[in-house]
Amino acid sequence: MRTRTRLLLTVCLMVAAVVPATAQHPEDAGAPAVLSMQERANVVNTWLQERLDTVLPALMRRENVDMWIVSAREYNEDPVIETMLPATWMAARRRTMLVFYDRGPNDGVERLAISRYDVGELFPSAWDPDEQPDQWARLAQIVSERDPASIALNTSETFALADGMTTSEMSQLEAALSETYRERIVSGEALAIGWLETRTTSEHAAYRHINRLAHAIIAEGLSEAVIQPGITTTEDVAWWYRERIRDLNLTAWFHPSVSVQRANAEGEDGDFSSDSGPTVIQPGDLVHMDLGITYLRLNTDTQRNAYVLRPGETSAPEGVQDALRQANRVQDLLTDQFATGRSGNAILSDALAAADDENLDATIYTHPIGYHGHGAGPTIGLWDQQDGVPGWGDYPLYANTAHSIELNVAVSIPEWGGQEILMKVEEDAFFDGDAVTYHDGRQTELYLIPRQQ
Image (cartoon, rainbow, N blue to C red; front, top):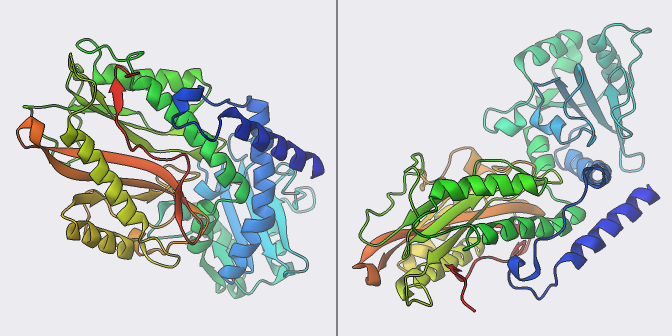
C-alpha cells in the first residue's frame, strides 16, 4: 500500500509540474505529458483500491445496504464491474462475481470474488470448484453464511448504467438463493450510480491534467497548423482529431464533430440528430468542434469555437464575440443553481428562468461525466427536452461529482445582417458540494485562425 501511495504522489506531482498554473491556454506551454501504459495501470489500480476502501463503504451505508452482488459474463460486462476490474483485465473472465459485505464501521466492507482465481489483488477468490463445482451454489453459501438483511443487485428501469444484471444472471441467482434471501433483494440503482459518479480527491486532482490534454488537442486542431481556409473541410479536421488522439496514445469515446456557421447562410436549427456533411472552411466562418478523450478511465467532453479571420481582420466581429459572452453568462446562471440534493430538473427549470429574465435565448443539456462520457448522475436537460427529463432529471445532485456544462444560446449577429447563430459551448467541471469549478477553465475568447500576436 505504501508503494502505491508513493507512486500516486509521484504521478500527481508530475502532473502538477507539466503546465504552469499561470498558463492561460494549454498551447502556450505545450501539451501535457501522457503516462506509459504501465504507469497508467499502476495509477488506475491505486485509485481503485482507494475507491473500494473509501467510496464503497460510504455508499453502502448511505443506502443502508448490507450486501452488494455484481455479476457479469465475459464480453457482456455490467458497466459497474468494468470499473472494478484490475487495469490489466480487459474484460470479465468466464463469469465474474464480485461480492461486497458490510461488516460494520470497525471491520469494514469484505470483498470477495466467486471466481476460480483472485480478481487482481483486491478481490480474493472465495470459490474452490473442487469442493463445490456449482458457482451459483457457492454464492448461495456465501450469502447464507453472512445472512445480510438486504442484497443489492444492479437493476434499474431508469438508468442503463445501473441495469447491468442480465435476465439470465438474475434468474440463475434467484434460483440459487432460498426464498428467505430472494425476498431481501433490492435494487442497487443508487449504489451503482453513486459508485460511478463519485470522484475521489485523487481523481479530481488528475482531472485538470486530463482536461488540459483535451484542450491542447483542441487548440492545435483549431489553428492554421491544421486548417487551411478554402481547402480544409470540417470532415478533414474531425479525422485529424481522431488521428491526433491516437498519436498521443489516447482514445476518443465518440467521433469528433466539426461544423461551421457563416454569414448569408442558413442558421442551425438546433436539431442535433442530423449531420450537415463535410464543408470547406472559409474566411469569415465560425468553426465549432466537439471532442472527448478517455485517459486513466476518465472521460472529457468539450465544445469550443474558432473564428477564421477575413483578410484585414484582426478579431472576430463584435456580435460573434458577444455571443460567446452570452453563452458564458448562461453557464454562470446554470452553475449558480447547483446545490446538493437538488434534482436535475429543478436546476434546469430555475436556470432557464434566470436566463429568460436576462433575455438570453438558452437551451441547456448538461450531463454528468466520469467513467462514462454521458455519465451517471442527474441529467440537466436534453436538447429536445427543455421541460425536464423524467427519471434521469429527477435524480439528486451529490457532492464530489463531475459534470459537462453543455448548452447553447441563440444570438442575432448585427454584422451578419441580424442572422441568428447558435453559440454552443461545453466545459467539464467539478461540484464539491458548495460550488462548481471548471477543471481547466473555460473558453472566454474565441480561437482565431490564424493566431494573432
